[in-house]
Length: 108
Image 1: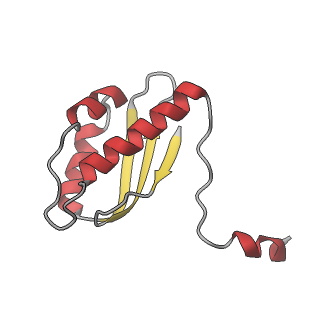
Image 2 (image 1 turned 90 degrees about the vertical axis):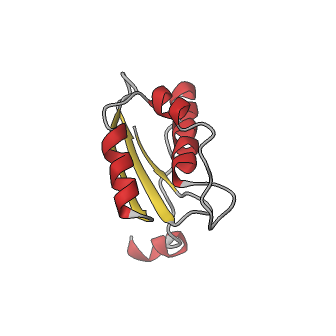
């Protein structure tokens, strides 16, 4: 399953997560925005890990000093919990909307 997640109150703007449906192993994690060094490290570390292991390890992460509410690892944990819920219920992630849907009829 591939999932696009829009983190809140952090520097990152988009997380793209790819998880194997059968093993629930993270195949890939990409991001846009944020601290490239830290998030590249996180991406390399979580590849090949089970979703549940990452969810457990990222519980109670410290928050960023700028947002005082959350952190990228906490937002990644939130995205994985969202994905896990969709996988458990059998629902597919919705296609992300980028504000162009009202104009879709013009291109038929």
